[in-house]
Length: 339
Image (cartoon, rainbow, N blue to C red):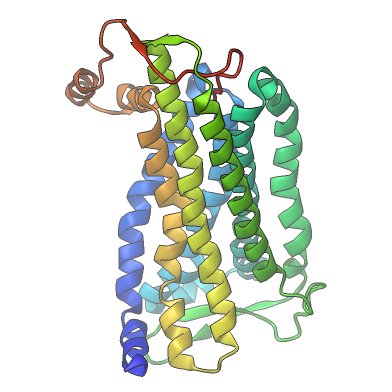
């Protein structure tokens, strides 16, 4: 029975690619719009949104690379092979470099975003000062460490291999490729470390948030309530996007395990899930959850990029009621966390 399931999943390779395209293209468009919105409006020039910008770079590079080296070569291999066969060798190596580089960079900045939300709760007034100092080292870490780890892939030859059964083709590196970390499954260990570290940070963040919410000593107006609601949703954004990245990490670990099983139907069944699982973590969840998390951010997007009638309709639905005070669970003075 399991053999039939694996065989059936592997036969749906193209369908999974089409599904991945259907969810990735709208998400990519929204992501690009969000990037432009953050850059254009100074109110979003804070540490949280700058980390979002940093993460958007490996996210988008990964998606473009997956079209370049996998989706287009599978779906349109017969037409594209003459063009790809004329590419310089460094462009074949580039696909492998970007695949691993973007994933590691993405995981690093996701950990930083989780830390950002945790420190927004625990560091009170020192939060923004701390992260203004940390942004440059964070960017160097995110873009520098993966480059050091995987730059060696540019030193070996790449080649294309045709599949005579359907006209598709794949990228391969030369068999003599012997990276410095060959005896150590670096990518897989990093995936496990990423999940472990992120789970610890999430637990710490949730504990800190519960303590934060219990510090009751004041009355808040609607503006304060709306701000805290947004901050809570940004916290959920960071945690839920981690879930998407955990799916990516799990897919990488599972692929590594099944490759060594020599069960080719099982390998094919797992590998067919690669496009959509990676898209969900890299562009779908980060883009749509960010659009959901902040009313102010969403209204700026609608004002800048949507027709006037849609903007006015959305504004009517999200209008804040006249100012009034409400008894709530307030926070300790000076500990109102923010983006």
